[in-house]
Image (cartoon, rainbow, N blue to C red; front, side, top):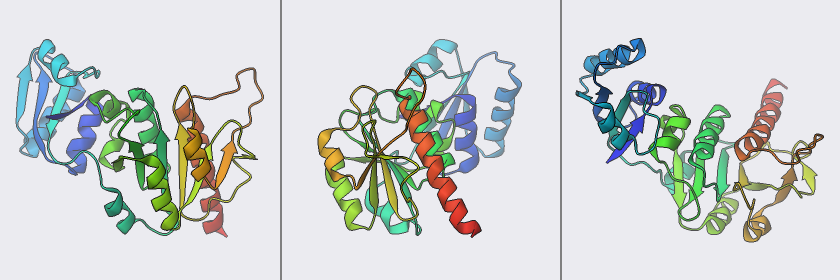
Length: 245
């Protein structure tokens, strides 16, 4: 059983219609206007609703902050890499994660990548957070629009992407270039490392460029989702500048 919890995430799932919703559980006795609005949306779309005590929603949410609503969904959770590559546009953008294990960081990265217009997010099967209800909730509905690909071997996946004309940019605090010194105006994959160890050595060797974000304060590193956002929106800036010219 797959679930989505939280008001915003459930609303996006209902409105996008990308995956079938089996039914939606609401907390009994709630008078929250936003929950009442969701109940009405469900009824308009013919989605069955159930009213449950708070303890039942806690179990369904599996650690996520449910805010009084949990949707039970159907359909595949993860996308296939080949299907993504068959449909990506020119100057495609992918974000790949190496060992991001905090589900809230994963959710924030999904939302940021979606906002930056990425075509997909790639995560490995091992040493990585997955699409738990907490991650989906943190993404605030972005999982309904951004495909998440789960791969067995991230190193081999980067090789595949290079064969498909993707440039690979690894974000590393010891990178030889700053993030705003390189050209992102082609098919590119940004690879960011996990919270503790950063990029693994094998992945670094597969990158065409290792880039860094210079800092000037007493803290020398950024949260992984913030760091990825800085680079992703530099990519957006460069591509917008190209279009405007």
